[in-house]
Amino acid sequence: MLLGREKGLNPLLYKKKDLDMKENKHVVLYVDDDQDMLDVVRIVLEANGFIMEEALSAESGLKKYKQCSPDFVLVDLMMEEVDSGINCVKELRLLGNKVPVFMLSTVGDSLHDITNYAQLGLAGIFQKPVDPEKLLKALRSKI
Image (cartoon, rainbow, N blue to C red):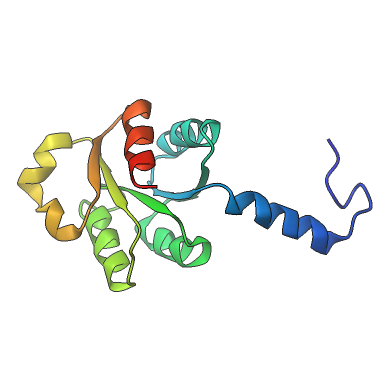
């Protein structure tokens, strides 16, 4: 398949076409230091009409958030530091985030014992590995 430039099309038109394609799909930013999890979730999301942006750390996640203006954010609880996921969510709130944020964790329901996720403004929590149907149902319920 030839890209727009290879076909001799105006590069500005080619870029506009890419933007138009994104406007019809919801963008999910997924912040996790586990590349395998990022890859699995990407397959699920993209197969179901979403676009996924990824970041491998809380810091890069905040930068990517500013760049891509996602419709949803998924954040792993434990990344480079135990509480970096929680700190990432807090920083998103300070940035004025209004989109649903979901936390992913291997501790699952015991996350309630670690922190009050309602105070963080989370839309929900998913146990890792994530059940694709539950993830898609939760995202679609917020559209």
